Image 1: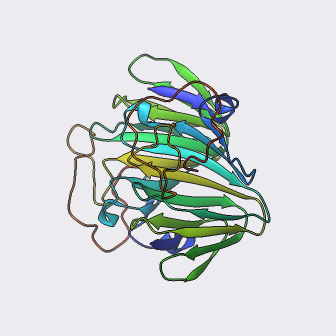
Image 2: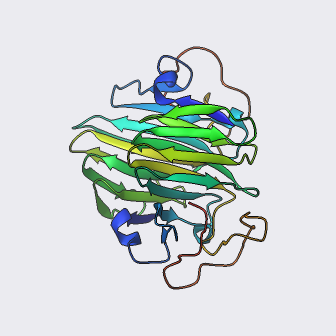
Length: 143
Length: 143
């Protein structure tokens, strides 16, 4: 049994800050925990527009607070987002999240994010199996 | 891409009510979604004491609201729980959750809960690979 708090992620490898300043992601469960998924709390700033693409990961996102929209980059379809909205990227879809107000969301990744992922030349996060490095990451990893 | 809301779970297979009336679990992602995990929002009533054991599943639980305690049934250790607390049952530990106030938590199961699990003769949830049946379940499944 492992017991942690969100506050314990602050200032560690588990807290990742978007280099553009649009979001912060706190990863309370990572690949190194060996349970087959990672589990993140992500806060997206009001007024930001964020393009994401996880070519190697499935992600589920469940909103707790905030409102905005999700645009499916493959189809162009736009979905409203609010507290209780959930989207499941089961087809590695490119997508855009626009935050009208500050959004707080819980995210599950399979396979788990390890913590050292950075964009490759195609803007895609690779699969990584090494344990996280020390230091706070600021290098565009998975939210 | 799948987009759903918590409200859409109400009154369906995805909403599971504890037969003792102590908790409600809304499973927005289930095994049938084919992504390797299930993702639940569980509300535990204030004043309730709940014994859980998932012999076949790993579970991560992250509290959003409420306070109480977690007792590791294997070691007897007691942990305080509050907003931002997370516990990861990576060793299939028997555990007791005591809710001092109403608790709201997000839970990830690996392997995914399918929706038809019921306690076996040892009080353990079996692995189930069939799709969920219709109707609202009230038969002591995973929270």
